[in-house]
Length: 314
Image (cartoon, one colour):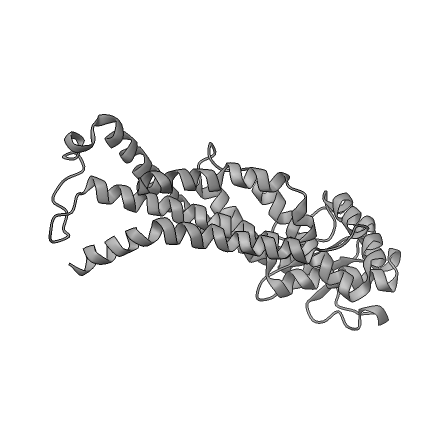
């Protein structure tokens, strides 16, 4: 039953649960807690998939009194029966595929994203300027100004991070609006939101298409932008940030960058006029995240961890 429980848990946490959470409206009032809940669900799905493989392997390779396998993968057909044995083999193979795809996705996403950012950083360093006016005195190092008429603002995370704005941003926005947009981008860099997106991108690529939820990435991207919005509100206020977001709404986001504008601008501006974050929702989301990780681990995974310890210590 543990193998079945792990399998069902992995399927539910990688498909239906993310789909329902992506449709919920409460995360906009507790973005940080909602991201923690998203991370807990993704981690629990991966651990459940691996645990299902371990549980099935222990059934396919039955251990003897000394803890060593006494059977081959085919010798258990007579014990389990063809239907159960076939299901075990399929799930075990799927677990191996998920593990291999997860490793490959982590490497692929990390290498490709950093390569694109390095190339774009080189370009903005060549064509951009570093001059600062009075209202950019506190912008900090890594600021690049592009000679572009359209208002735009984005950041390139990494060890050599950059905040990029256009001349159109500086001429169109007021001082407090520029401060808001710069605070937004600095919040992305300071909290390393790019690493959160990379993790979700890798997990999304690891699971097969028929079980994963395509809406999870979009929901996490929106929550990350809302987190940066909250930091900008604390620095410059709601109204300046809303005006700055509207001004930069039509700008395109370079690949690998985190931009202030984009297709989520309308929803984020509407949120700025709402009631604000809710402490009660945050506490509930943190409690749910802990339950997603702690309860299944204690109830299902702990017996198998004990069994593994017995096998390896035999």
